[in-house]
Amino acid sequence: MTHRNAQSSDSADRAQPVLVLNAGSSSLKYQVVVPETGERQAGGTIERIGEQGSDVADHSAALEQMTDDLRSDGVDLHSASLRAVGHRVVHGGPDFSEPVVIDDAVLDRVRELSALAPLHNPAAVIGIEAARERFDVPHVAVFDTAFFSSLPPEASTYAVPRDLARRHSIRRYGFHGTSHQWVSHAAAELVGRPIGELRQVILHLGNGCSASAVRGGVAVDTSMGLTPLQGLVMGTRSGDVDPGLHAYLGREAGLSLDEVDTLLNKKSGVLGLSGVNDFRELEQRLSGGDVEARLAFDVAVHRLKHYVGAYLAILGGIDVLVFTAGIGENSIALRAAVTEGLEDLGIVIDRARNGARSKQARVISPDGSRVVVAVVPTNEELAIARQTAELVG
Image 1 (cartoon, helix red, strand yellow):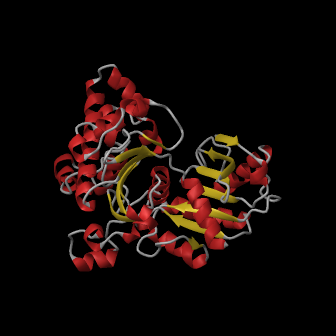
Image 2 (tube, one colour; image 1 turned 45 degrees about the vertical axis):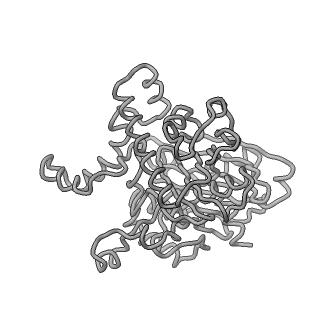
Image 3 (cartoon, one colour; image 1 turned 120 degrees about the vertical axis):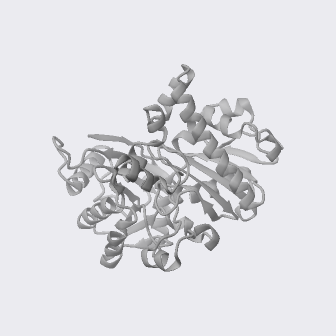
């Protein structure tokens, strides 16, 4: 199954594009982007790769279909002077704090890091291997964890035995880093202040959710940890739970470690509490008086306020509070609920501004507010394209 759309312009045609790939275990998301102009020439998603009944046998076949689809949309990768391919890689572990040109050694290390991201890195490796065979241009890995490599030791360290942590690379890594980095800079531009003087709390709220504390453009704390499971309530992930829950469920429910891991990653969060993981459907049920939907919404909001308050303390105050990603950019009700009751902290939103629908970055707090509350659309693909282009020159 393929979903795609195309957009071209004269300015985009005059520059070399970057192909941005995000390979999942059974999907391939792609965009062709001109880094300098921000023009998105085309993009789409190929799903059900390798599944029974699918016409797409593997990722190599998916890339072939992508190439054909792009050609149909007027983008011929072989005649467009493709500059490079930028790959989203979820986990860079302790090794990668910056984007890196992919060679065999880098690919081997990404594969080894699969123990830290078993749902994500193996798929990225497969996508990279297939793309390197097909496109004879530089390939660059851009890591979700890279932005958070700057976390100070007190924020990145778990209170577990030091030798164990060193031996198994146990620390808080954080995720969605490409989005948090992009949005922090875009928010500074929006408010017209140098990023170096801003204290920001960024809430990336999609099916996966994460929060970050950013001082002067540098991440100092984040909600996700060793894996993307820690932190906020998400579509299917529990977020923070008592670490003793695994042992308790093993003893009392007879669940194995793998079963508990699956439970917390794929059957919990908003889905586990309400029966749905689409936030739009949750809000529809909420408006209809659904009690389970109300509890799921309230639990998610409570957790968000918990992190906003914690990061206000870590930063010593907030200059900008930013909502981004699908839910953060579109849910009027969630933004209102998260900021409700925070007036004494300087966090206030204007009801009319919050209720206005827009795809543009915008301020939703009243003029002159102590804390600027903003909605800033994320653009991870453009961020990856620009980091890729900067690295390959």
